[in-house]
Image 1 (cartoon, rainbow over the protein chains, first blue to last red):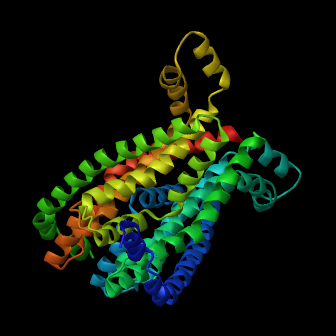
Image 2 (cartoon, helix red, strand yellow):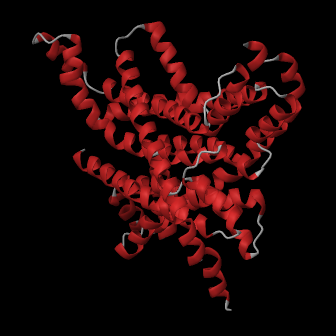
Length: 226
Length: 221
């Protein structure tokens, strides 16, 4: 057997791949579910915090800035480990899935709040004044005048940040979530063959490569506008 | 609550373990940040050759490694390579995975920076007799780096945070040591202390970044 054959036998073993394909497919579904939950809750909470911050209540804003800074500074894995291994000490025991979801959603909340807020503040004061002088209320101005302009600016950075954080679903494997990497790792130890890891890598590539290319396209599209 | 999550006795007991972890996290960061920057610089300088047959494969390379979660790369090297007789150990695997992943991110940022420097700069530098490499190093790169400094800093913050992945392949960095101390003391205090250390060390950088990002977006509007 040549070296090449041995390499293929090891990393692209057809028999092993066929056997564990259903496992990896299941893991892919779990990853998608986890990712969707993180994206929806994280971005919704981030937008809500940014809107809350635009009210300008000083003590509340200081608190928001502190929480945002906290979750931007901590490594996501540290947050996951704290929730999963730390909270049971006070009789709160979230599952690995919930721990990963919570941790990543908090991180995405922090980053998206920051991006939304930067978008809102980047809209010139004259826009507010003009809208208010036509008789629109504060809320109407925010929703109908400021946000549509602000959101357009935030889309490229938000997309790239969301992709980066969503990739963090792989961290769930540390707390026994049966997502792609977790399923692939246990298949490797069951089959004594790394082919499931190759399949897992392929699954990530299928999920994230189009998103990365889409993020790049959005960025260049924005650049032409300015 | 304080007795559980910030127990003074446990802190005293776990401090030497955690401190050793902090030292390793700092060392690991000092290794992987320049490694990623170097990889990124090579990618970006290659991409500055404005030929489609150079640029497209490079972009594909960058997007390929940006699509993988870094942990997947790390596990692939750590758990996969021993099957072909290559037992590299945790540290080498972290270095390779980070070189590929963070190198791709740095490369993308630096490429955007180099693209942002007007072509006239290169033409002017070349016409004064500077070579290609000299032009790149002394004229283009300094301006490119200044233009994308916020993104470079932001990525560096992410890289330092990513060193926590080392704990998965048994590298005794801050998170790993905190987990060890936790299982020794049956108390989550060490993890809270590790989190506090990360926060105290990285908070100034987060503040600086938030300020720079606000300024950048305001300039765009």
